[in-house]
Image (cartoon, rainbow, N blue to C red; front, side):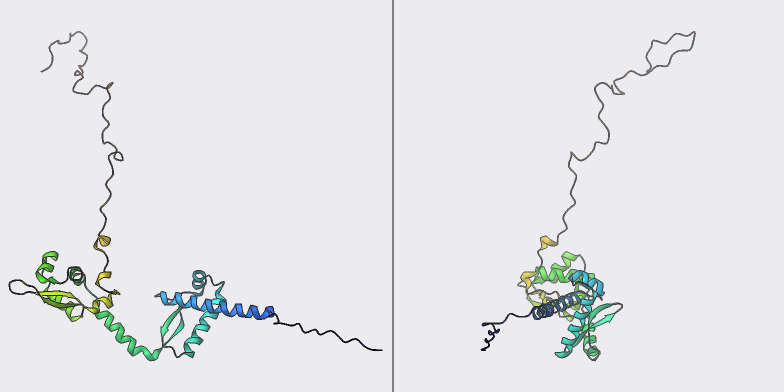
Length: 248
């Protein structure tokens, strides 16, 4: 008896990918997206963010996914030799530099403290920025006070410079801003300064005549005014006639 050969079970063409593989791929993609989201939130925040807050803002689906994202970020930072890690601080997460870079970072912090400006320096620098090249006399005329020391301090911080001399009697100095000024205020160029009209505070809106209620209601025609009505006279006592002579 001849046995029949079993048909070839191998299907021709590419085999379909098992569902488990697709789920793993989707899971890896989701984890990468979660890690990128957590990283963006931590970079944009200046204070630690709790796992619950990160999950809520990033719509990450729970604290467990947040912790996995943090572990993935730290593993990637360590793999590429990054100078920072995601640290757990006061129940939240924050990106911090490694301790071996404290000396470098402290110099940056000290430089930022030196760059802090007083109110007088900010006002003077604003005039220089918008009116440059500008004379010291024009700056003092606008502010109403002497600004020699303030200008000297701005020049020491490399925020202002001598831009030339005016074609006037005595050839006074002209002042302008520096490249350091653009770096500190994050401006590509002077053309990107905010418009003065945008900085102007709008005047308060005055109510219209229809919105203002009159203080005193005008008398109606039926109610005579006190001046037009005759003076009221008291009734004379019993036994006396009223004096017909009007009172002066």
